[in-house]
Each structure stands twice: as C-alpha cells, then as structure tokens.
Amino acid sequence: MPAAATRRVAAACDEVLTRPVPGAVREGVLRVRRELERPLRLAVVGRVKAGKSTLVNALLGQRVARVDASECTRAVTWFSYGHQEKVVVHARNGRSWTRAFEADGYLPADLGAAPEDIASVEVVLCNEALAGTTVIDTPGLDSLTADAGARTEELLGLDGDSQRALQAADAVLFLVPQLTRSDDQRLRALAAAMSRTAGASGFSPATVLAVLSRADTIDDGTATATLDGSGDTWPAATVLAARYAEQLQGVAGGVVPVAGLLAEAADASLITDAVVDDLRRLAAMPEDDRELLLLSANLFASTPDVGVPEANRARLLGLLGLPGLRLCLAHLADGHEGAEAVSKRLRALSGIEAVHDAIRRLFTAQADAIGAHRALVALESLSFAPGAPAWMRDVVEEAREDPALQGLRERDVLVRWTRGELLLPPELAADLQALAHGADDATRLGGDPRDPAADREALGRRALAAATRWLRFANDPRTDLPARRAAEVVRDSYTAAWERLAGPA
Image 1: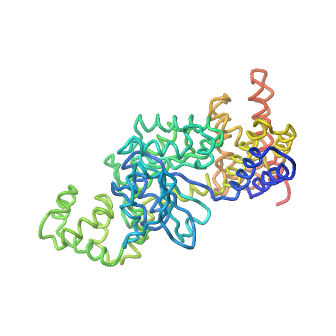
Image 2 (image 1 turned 60 degrees about the vertical axis):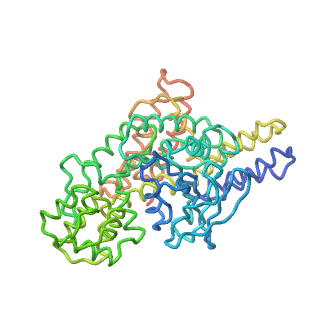
C-alpha cells in the first residue's frame, strides 16, 4: 500500500491540532504526528547465542555489531541512518556520551559504564541498508543478567507503559537456532503482551518473522549442499522451517532458514583473497587428513603442521564455522575461484536473500499500513483521554472510514484474530493471512506471482471466489456480530481486488 494511509492519519492529526484541545492531549497528538515520519523499527530478538548480532551484521552488510560477550551485547542497540557516524551511549541516569568505533569497525567493547547502568546504545551509520529501517539488536531473552533481559522486554513495551510503547518496535525478527518449548512459549507470550499494549496493538503474525538462524548446523544425514549449486541447500533446515511455520501459525508470518555466519561473511565482505589463500592451502591436503581436521573445532584450530598458522585457522573458524569450512574446502579442492566468486556462492547458499525478501514483503512493503495503524490506535486512545473533546472521536472515525485505510481495517481484523477475539474456519484464516502478508494481488490472493497461470483473469476468479466465501460466512446465522463485521471488511478487500482485475488492464 502506498503512503496514502500515513498521509490520511497525518491529516487527522493536523485537523485536531488546528482546534482547541487540552495541553496534554495536544502534546500526545504532536508525538503521534512525529512518529508517522520516522522509519520502520525492526527488532531482532532471541535467546543468547541465537545469532542475533551475526544476522544484524548480515542485514547491514557490515560487521559492526559485536558477537562476543561484551558490555555491548548486553545493551539494547539501535542502528539508524545518518551521514555523521557515531556511537552514543545513553545511561539510565540521563547522561549520554560518545565512544569511538574500534579500529576494525566493531562497536567498542568498553562502553564507559557498567552494563546495568546503560539504558541503550545508539549507533548511526552511513549505510543504505538503514535508509528506511532502524534495526534494533537486543540482549538475549535469557541474557547473562536478569536486568539485560528486562531491558529487552522494556524495549518491546511489554510492561504496558505508554511512553515505552511509543518506543516499541514495529516488527520483530525472532531468532531460533532450533525451536524449543521455551522459545515457543516466549514467542506466544510476546504476542499476548504486545497485543495488550496500546502503542504496539498492531502486533500480528504479519509483524513477526521467525528465523531459523543456524541452518547449516542442522543435519538429518541428507544434507548435500555444495558451493557449485549441485546439491540441495540445507534440506533438513528447510523441512524443519516448514514444520515450525505450521506450529507458529497465528503467531509468526513465516519461518525462514538462514546460515547466519555464511551470510555475514558474504554480505559484510569478509571473504578476502588472504582468506581464500588459507582455504586453498587446507583444501590441498589429502582428503582423509582434511576430513580428520574437520571432525571438531578443536582439531581444526589446534592440529599442528597443516600449512596454515593456528591464528589464521581460528579466524577461519570464527568466520565460517565448521559447516561453512567443509563446504569451502570441498569446493576449493577442485576449483580455483577467487574471493569474489566464493563470496557470491556463499551468499546464495546462506539463505539471506530469502530473509531480505521476507522482510520486504512482510514489513517494508507494509510500512505505511504498520505506521498508520500504530498512529491511528494511539490517536484513538488520546481521543478518550481526560479532557479530550468528543469531536476528536469523530475525526478518528472519519479517518477509519476513508477508503485509503482499507489496509488498516484488514490489519485490525488480523490483530483481533491473532488475539483470539475472532473464531475463523481454517480456510478463512488462511485467506486473512495471505491478504496481510501479500505485497501484490497475486500474493494477496494466495498465488505465486511467478506462476504463468496467475494472470488477471485467473486472479479475478480467485478474488470473486474469496469474496463469495466471506459473504457466505457473514450471512451464516451461526456467525456472531464481531465476526460478521470482520467478514464484511475482508469481503470488501476481495471485491475491490476483483473489480481491479476484471477491469481494463
């Protein structure tokens, strides 16, 4: 949806601001108006050692977030776009100060205060990946200290405080190396808590993407991934991601597998000619010796007399991990590619492009709807604040009924279904999620835009069939009033799609 939704909500804010309202309400409306102009905020959340900072580096295409157990990894860190690069530490007592980047480009290990005294770290980078999105790297949900984990919950607005809710993320990447019972419970608790928070009430499966963050470490004995593309890429991880997607239906918009280390190495330009030279020396070893070397991280790092110094091998291990090393050495034993070619192949294998695609589809393409929904909910809440004039509610209602905000009405239905307020048959629930997740008519109608059969006529028939399904549901005497109203919203979306597709090309 284009920026029409945020423009319409901005116009509603401006209308309120031209008329007399109490000072506290006016300040709140001004805050909502400013929020409409900020970039999308994407939080990366998960357990300790889930690969959060590694994925952040891959998303940024820059190795800047620290992955070691330093002060920086125990603080909420905001990465935003700016021409003047800097690191600003914000303490809990209100003080702020700047710190220099390390010589290798990493964030400083020493932030100048104890971790428990740091509220957040602000990192400004002249990086195009941040031009429309602020990325938030959070401490682990089971961090080394209870306080660090609490700061993650504070960031996400889980305590219900309105100010913290305004600072909450718009969308979440939830990382799981492998989904455990505690991960599942945390994700569902996160959903429930966010849906209760006024400023974050846009939470829905469309604003959460689960990432199976170590696809290259999952092996069922059938993995045959190769750098030359002749094998299947992480088949065990693909099967596991599909299973998790079913398990998390109604909580996350999808599950995407990624080999985080390989993605970081490729996208952050860490595969240099020197790295490839070391890899090639190891690849030239007799095959049996090479296989023995790769049996464990300890053997790889400490076996003497293999032609590559131990320090270099330690760097290779940190760069690629054992699975990535196995791929590279097996490939280079038969080839002579340079650093750029190896980097491209690693990127293709890593699955990072699928993560980027999912972020674009679920979040970036929906940023207008996400921002407008958040702002309209906040504006509606202010219209019921003490002293707020009754006409404010009329302004909000007029905005809600504007055709430009049909996408927001869809999002309202999705949020209510996520909360369990609406009971839908499985087929209609699938319709609703496809509408919310799709960036164009083909994907919104549950089709594949690459499918030649997904022409206008075929899509038009799908839209008409879906509109009919929802009309029948709305007219069913067993359907309660809230579900009937929701059905009318979704039916209108399908009817509009049918009219677009049935008309002139």
